[in-house]
Length: 154
Image (cartoon, rainbow, N blue to C red; front, top):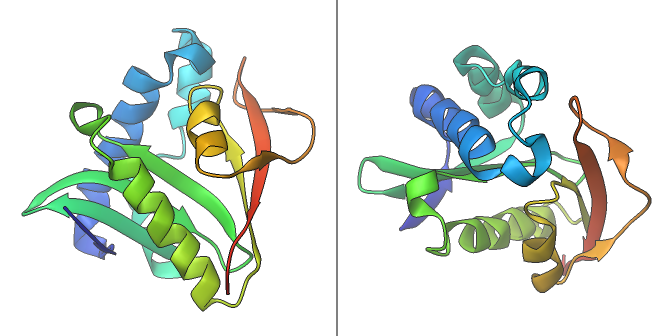
């Protein structure tokens, strides 16, 4: 598996990963609620993915030509995306992506990385050294975003 910068050509496949990961792996958050899913997925489009790739630091996890995951971090050190294809779950994709996103923050001379975790991913982030960083925030529909942070080396 390789983590590399995303290109505009990755947008369609990366968008499919986002949408499938949310729909299939984040059930603890959306609980199958159709309106919540519709809200959460509304901006997960190939056009938006191309815009994110052009405007921020987006990476993909790839095995040959197949994408397994997608992650993004902005210049302020907020991880905006860290999603894995359902068939690649528990293969180290998210952990490897997180390491790359944290390295990007270090390259940007940032000392803290922040993110809004799902309930599904909270345990993963705690195991990776993140701490809770404030009360839960209203998310899409019935979901809540859980603010988390971690100090990283710059």
